[in-house]
Amino acid sequence: MHKRTMIQAALAAALLAASSLGLAQDNKFRIGLILPMTGQQATTGRQIEAAARLWMAQNGDTVAGKKVELIVKDDTSVPDVTRRLAQELVVNEKVNVLAGFGITPSATATAPIATQSKTPEVVMAAATSSITEASPYIVRTSFTLPQVSVVLADWAPKNGIKKVVTLVSDYGPGIDAEKYFKERLQLNGGQVTESLRVPLRSPDFAPFLQKVRDAKPDALFVFVPSGAGAAVMKQFVERGMDKAGIRLIATGDVTDDDQLNEMGDGALGVVTSHHYSAAHPSAANKKFVEAFEKANKGLRPNFMAVGGYDGMRVIYEALKKTQGKGGGDALLAAMKGQIFESPRGPVYIDAQTRDIVQNVYLRKVERKNGQLWNVEFDVVKDVKDPGKAK
Ligand code: DHB
Image (cartoon, rainbow, N blue to C red):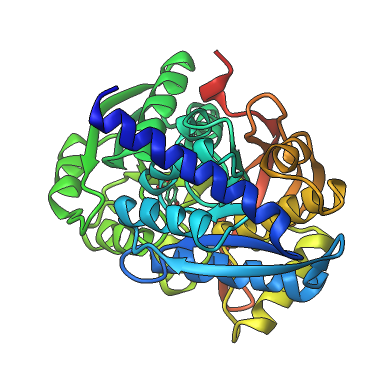
């Protein structure tokens, strides 16, 4: 064996030993929650941690005779840090489940650790289609960009939008959004005339928006990750794009409930597609939003919070089903196929793909009682990730 392969084999053995040791050791059930708590993606971490704590406050911390412990780690959205933290959590803290993962590179960097240690990795935020294929131990409770982008590409041409320029963050989810939006729009007789990509870190949208203005499409389609939407919206309005007759359409990441209220009137009328709106009119969601705001000084939950809350439910249910006696494989099996009503609507974890199947809503930003909301006006039910349908 090569030295590198030997080191990898030794590490794999250590990871596996650590995870099986953890099983018999005590009466605790540990969840290692790795999130960006600082830096550009900090709102994702704040939302998911708050949601996980809310779930535990509402459902207790004893499940199937085990005391549930949440261990939160800040990976600052640097994938090498995520991987190191995941390894430490498995080897030293003997976590039973790894969870969180604010961005795609963090989720995929952890995949080999999950596989080697047979630890379920519950992805609560990251949304590139291919993530679940990086390890058979990955289960996702967020969404995928293809899932929401195709729904918007079906809506657009029926609403006078034929020529579109796309603008996405230049990494996994952005490339997924660009590809699936474009393919579906073309299938529907529309056309993407130009595809622009902006860097993930500290993007400057101004030069890209100028290009769009010159190209004069019917609409600009945007994907940027949670936390970056307000900057896009501000510059879109400042450049007078709306006055030039260019509509803004986007995935719901852009009109993020975490920031929407600060975006101002420029956001009014923007149509997006997504799996969750804080304005979703169900009893379960009203209860969720109220409890979340009450526990977090009025902070409105966004789609990240729902991914975290539902991820905790999936973990709790798996622990119950295995009666606190299962290792990683048993927990994983108990996560597959779960069906439940989320604050976002009905969902299930597809047993084959380990990805979430859910409704995708068309929404329009409206002002209600002095606040901005993503108001749902149409729904496509039970959407599977189109990235895996082939
Ligand atoms: C990802 C991150 C986000 O903040 C988001 O809104 C969608 C996708 C990601 O990195 O996968």
